[in-house]
Image 1 (tube, rainbow, N blue to C red):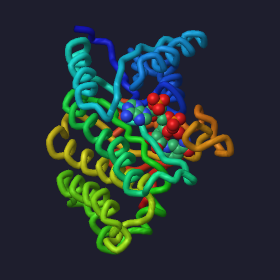
Image 2: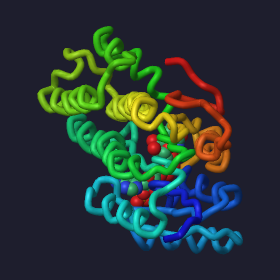
Image 3: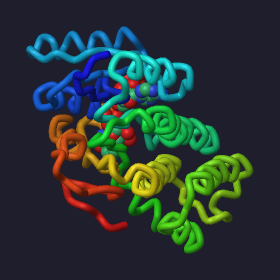
Image 4: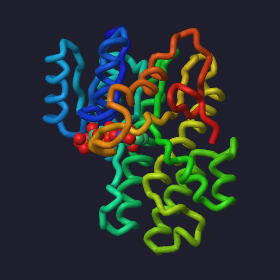
Length: 276
Ligand code: NAP
């Protein structure tokens, strides 16, 4: 088994994830895994970094597929005995003009952004080694999405007591409510992406709390963040930041030094803790 530190970035064949891998290849003292759901897209991305003189390794990972997540988990366990850095970056967003029925958008978006990310965490968090760093990529849209929720939902999402089961039930209810066209009546905002990222952010707070309760001595730091508005296939060419600039906050959190005792359980933007 290798003692080399290891970092894994989900959804990193392009966009912000690719830029995070590029930065980690330069700064992380260990093996950096670029992962992608499509093997050829992933390997092309690794080759692109190689042309820049950077060495990333590749492993297939589709966060919608539990078998794929477990294959990566088993690989990490056998080869490295765990992992040191996990960046949950993979995500999807329907374009504003997309005419796909809202209920379908809700189901598809939540499947990847919330349930897929949660499945990766369920399988990989137990493997994170002491002094490990976990970064869940959320978005600034959580602010307006949360304001668009009923007072009752806002209170639940802001609660320091909410459990992972309760959060999963709420995310499931959102999808079901959209199918019955009652989501607005039930207090939800009209944004599937926004709700999925509220889910990612609240999940991060819950996971950080669980680490405090169960693995306090391990000094693991786990946070969510917004990369900013970044020029990628998702956000388009008019966004204000380059992918490398978008990678800055996730990389900062992934590389928090071993003597840092925070941030932990926070949501950051531009390397700054946000209240929401
Ligand atoms: P992007 O260019 O569309 O890249 C998304 C990445 O996620 C791609 O590599 C994509 O793979 C991958 N992905 C999607 N579904 C996946 C799955 N089931 N399993 C594994 N990988 C999957 O988007 P981006 O702008 O870089 O976004 C990266 C993250 O930042 C997302 O979580 C996004 O929500 C968040 N974010 C972006 C912005 C922005 O302005 N761009 C702002 C706030 C937050 P394929 O190539 O196979 O599709």
